[in-house]
Length: 261
Image (tube, rainbow, N blue to C red; front, side, top):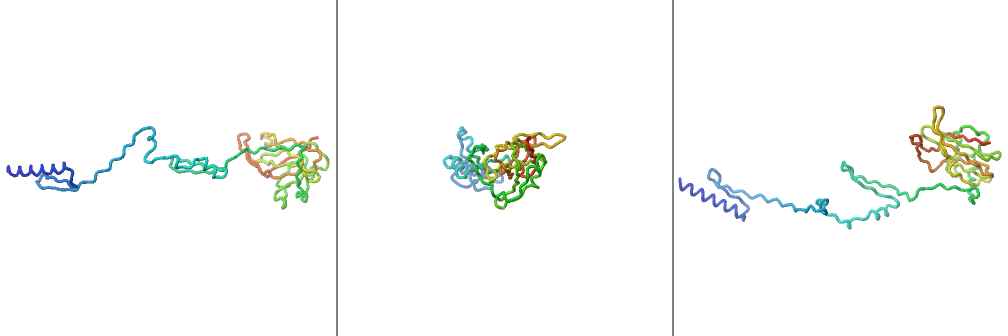
């Protein structure tokens, strides 16, 4: 029995010596039954590189970042031809990219004084129907009814004719269903030339009441040599706020022209 104990002790010490040397890819030991067991070592996991938690490394993560590797945003904007590119990440992780036009300068209305040398011809409109101002004076008219189409100018228009000189008129455009018509109003001479431009024909606004629609209005001083008023759809239509509502400018609507006596 003593010899058996000595043999087991010897084998155990030999197995421990092999484990400590670390020069083999196998582990050897003696189990409780006295049998010698051998298994292959598992590969050791590679240690992760420790990154110092200095301020320069706090936000680096696993990727290095070099600003010189990227194109400056100013250079990107120049290549977009007056457009700007926005990109951001939503909380959900979705990447959003949006491209918008860059407004270089807000357009400003140009007021042309009566003594201006401007003389623009609108002779293409003289072939259509001319509405006498006396027939619509003080009456609500629908642009949808009075507009006619010019093939030459490729636009709708209405032409009001003054049978006698008029110095001043009031104009109203009614707000219905949150829309209002604010057409261009161009005074023309007998030769269909424009020598004056109204800066803002609809300068004022009246709020809606229990007995009537709201409207925008203005007072127009008519130049002495004016024979016609040309109404054209306004290419600069948009929206404005009134009484907490957004009012859309439309090409169609109801207007009232009234001669000021």
